[in-house]
Image (cartoon, rainbow, N blue to C red; front, side):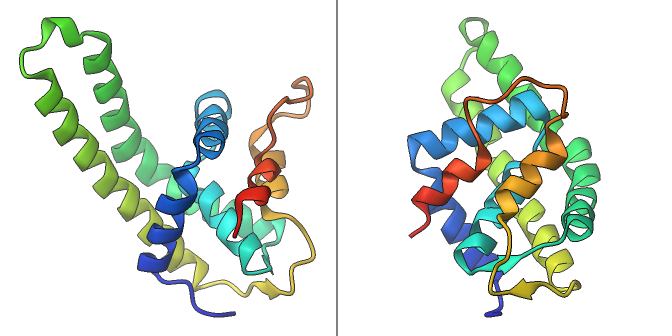
Length: 160
């Protein structure tokens, strides 16, 4: 496998995330099922490179990012949402929002760095046998949920 670097992963993520349907799908899975957007983006990038993860590898990647995200990224995101909900009461809301978003993006990059570090420790299978996005969805969506209108695997159509 060609080594995936933090900078190539970040560029890939920014490019893919610009698509409105991709963004809507990822945010839906983040908000409804507590999926990690960066891990979903890594799954998409691995699909693009035709690299498969096993279920245990994906669980390991998920666990490697969960604590950091819960401790740092998610509270900052929640704070930004709180400010957004009360923006009429906050002077200089636009400047504050911009700074919080900038800080959140730094934390997102840190999450990606943690994922790349963990990915480099595992043996992945080249010549993809399975869809990493489908596998990740099966880990975060409980089986008793009704069938979904959106699927993470729908993102595969946007991989160039």
